[in-house]
Amino acid sequence: MFAISRILAALATLFVFASVASANETYTVKPGNNLIWIAKQVGVSWQAMLLANEEDLKQKYERICGNLSDEFRNRTENKGRLKGGKYFCNDNYMRAYGNTLQPGWTLEIPAAIAPATVEKTVSEIKGDRIALVIDDTGSMSNKREETANFYLAAIKKFEKKIVGVWLYANGKVRKYEAGGVKFSTRGNYENTFGALEEAAKEKPDAIILVTDEPGDDWNWGRVNVLPRVVAHCLPDYGTATCRENLQRLVKETRGRYIEGFSVPTAAR
Image 1 (cartoon, rainbow, N blue to C red):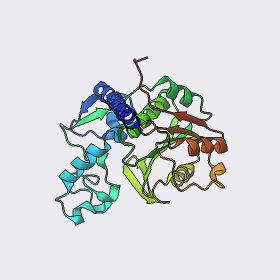
Image 2: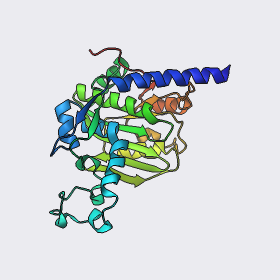
Image 3: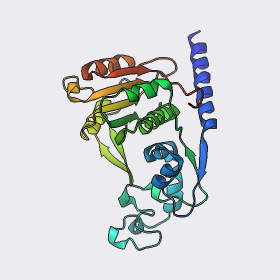
């Protein structure tokens, strides 16, 4: 009976994700485009554009740049007049996927609206500076991407400021920046607390955490130095393993706990 319930939960999740994906529009890259410019044109944040397209852009970046010499891919700014400019296939610019776009590529435009629960949560955050921290482990897949994009859409709608987007997994923390993705190393495995500490360095008014894992690097004696945390727990096959630790986290930071994944039923 338990196995059947897990299968049904998985099928329901896949149905929800398929519905979201089919609703998303696409943008065809034109000469001279970059992610920041495109995001402005379609009315979403550049962070949301990068999050929605990162895996595809990584693969295309390597197909284009993989056969180029190490000297070219690690050139300095002084050699920026080479073919393609200083950003093209330049690993020194943090693998600037968004600056190595090719005309004709198709990009997914992420959701521009969010579920009412997410919008209400963002609208009630005191202060305008918000950091978004996302579990980047394989178990998250589409759940973390869709949920994070809903928060980015709500942040944009209520004209709050995104101070940064951090993704974490296996002891590494990645920060989205205008030039690409910056890598740093902290903690071990599900390094949730390490990622929250990195985000806190930007002095946000609040941190939004999206995860389906309990985390294994908690330092509960230091959690109370974090700003308010909105902790969004995504159950894995119906089991919310993140519930206990995230509820403790929001209690320590005077934040808010949210559980589950939902999508907007209609544009508002």
